[in-house]
Image 1 (spheres, one colour):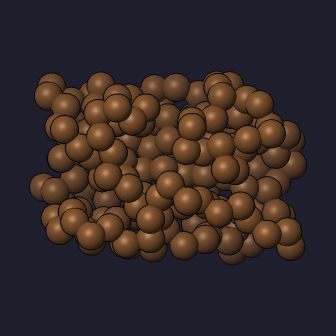
Image 2 (spheres, rainbow, N blue to C red):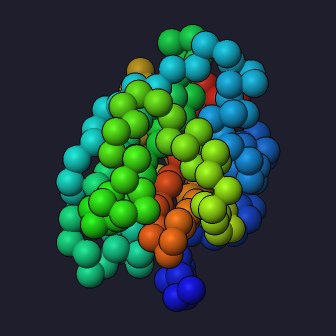
Length: 176
């Protein structure tokens, strides 16, 4: 298996974020964890299409030009609790990840964690300020966007084909 590029912009363990720490560190399925606390979980797809990789995703997709990006909000009883952003090389949609192109409003996590061949690399975390592209998009569903949002990133691979999944925790998650 070829080595995975190193993400130098996101860290392994944040020094702050006490309230968010259990969500940031949990290696299980975020979708499953939320569903355990909110059986009325719903997924709203806000974007799925080709886009250039974000600046801090280019360690993985630098030479690939455009990637398929999927952005969704996870809602608990009408309150947005997570903004999820995934990026995948378009070529891998014809191969290892072909079933992901037709997810619709189903959660990506359910697909990733149902396949035992999928490998997950260590979680990375980051505090996103207002200047970060994901903060701006994640905050769009909030009446007032906080100055910072906490996020975690996971790299998953299937047959050496990567998918980068970033989950931005919105303030509503703390009520679950």
